[in-house]
Image (tube, rainbow, N blue to C red; front, side, top):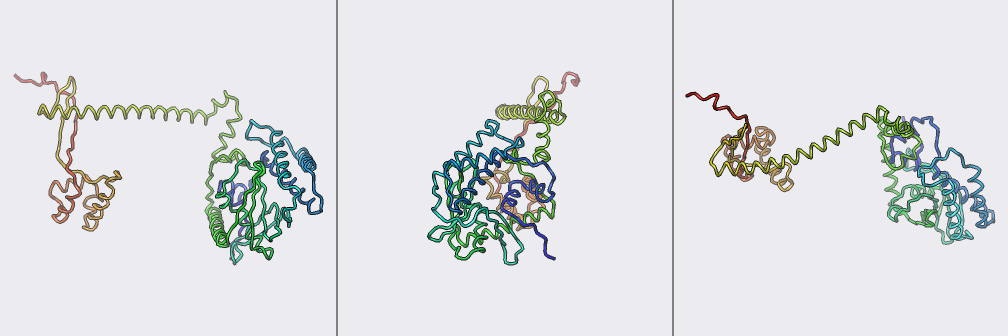
Length: 421
């Protein structure tokens, strides 16, 4: 039986890529939650409305003045704005976003008036496409405006009110309009030459890109693979969340396991915030982590001092010719043993030698006897003469003479109590 797949869109796939958990909430579980509209989304929608009406008028031989364009935008802004709009960037108010929209439309009008540089073919045009010949993988979307130049180049245009201007390389990698090109070329003949155009309205910038046939074929395969990842996530119910700067705009902030505690406590006054059980647990844990870090730094400092002092102890014992040194209430037994050292498993400079030694032992079927190359075990077998001669002669070239020095502290015996005379 054929799999009952959902109809995908660029926005659905983008949601999965940005946060799989949000995708689950929105498209799989279809969580019934109060939708919030950000002021950025509201601004984008109203600017789109104004530009759509501008070109609908143009299709009917009416060219708006700049004042008429701004008046239309202002009317729909005032009619549709509401107290439910939320603003993340609190340093700005609703009027600031309104003026951004006005400025963007004025710049657009000045740049493209009288809007006859190309012929408009369609506005807010719904498009469907299949990514495979078997028509298993279906996508849909809406193109802001389709136009055609006098020389026969088809243009897919998209209006953006984002406050981030992409590079040419980023535009080159954009999936949305390239997918629309695949759909466009299945809808009309003579669409071999297609230009993708993004209007970044807040910057008054136009970015253009084209795709070769090979680019589109590669995109189909990549998008099918992405859809397969989505379906695997659905089958396995595996939707990890992914935190990013977009979280503040997410409708599911209050129920997201990564954000729900923050959503709860950030509404509390300072005193109640400090009394929240979760806050207290985190603060206690953080305090202990800081204390542990401080102690670790102290331990590192103490270890460095011990290492330095041990060097002085070894040198004194060597010069004095003693193996036991006496203190006020402790004694130290000092030993130095001539031995060998094998290449380290953690030293990058010795990595190649280490690998060669491992390969040698495996070829000689001596991997298990040395506990899969436990260096101390290997050296003990070597020093005790327990390595087979054919291995011993080969292992020798990997071993470096070394001196293992040790300091063993112990309590000082009370010789007066034990003296017999």
